Each structure stands twice: as structure tokens, then as C-alpha cells.
Length: 61
Image 1 (cartoon, rainbow, N blue to C red):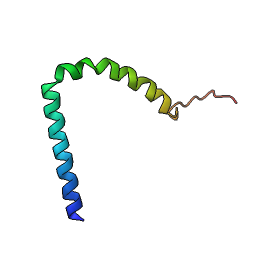
Image 2 (image 1 turned 135 degrees about the vertical axis):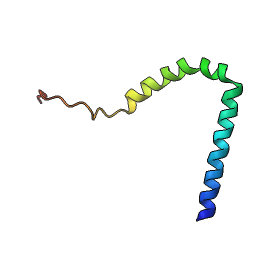
Image 3 (image 1 turned 90 degrees about the horizontal axis):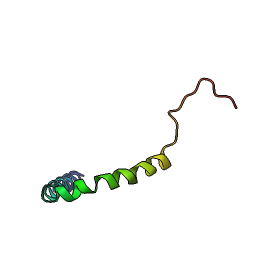
Image 4 (image 1 turned 90 degrees about the vertical axis):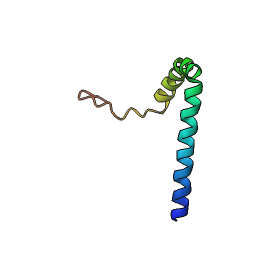
């Protein structure tokens, strides 16, 4: 059991290091993609949002 946990922790650590170095070398490219990522995330949020937080007191059937 601890071997699996250790391997998972090592894998996550390696992934974080790889992402850090990738963003460090390609920050301009990643920052240039930010507007497109925001435009992609907006419709996805609206698609998957369940509207459970809208509580209206004057709601009539």
C-alpha cells in the first residue's frame, strides 16, 4: 500500500516539475493562449453548471 502511495507522490512531483520548466521556457506562448482558454472555459462552465445556486423567493410555477 505504501509503495503505491510513494509512486503516486513521485509521479505528481515529477509532473509538477515538468509543468514548471515547460511554463518557464514557454511562458510567452502559454500567456498568448490565455484568451482562447478563457473563451473555451466560459461555454463549458455554462454547459455543466446546474444552476443550483439560484434561489428566488418569488418563484411561481
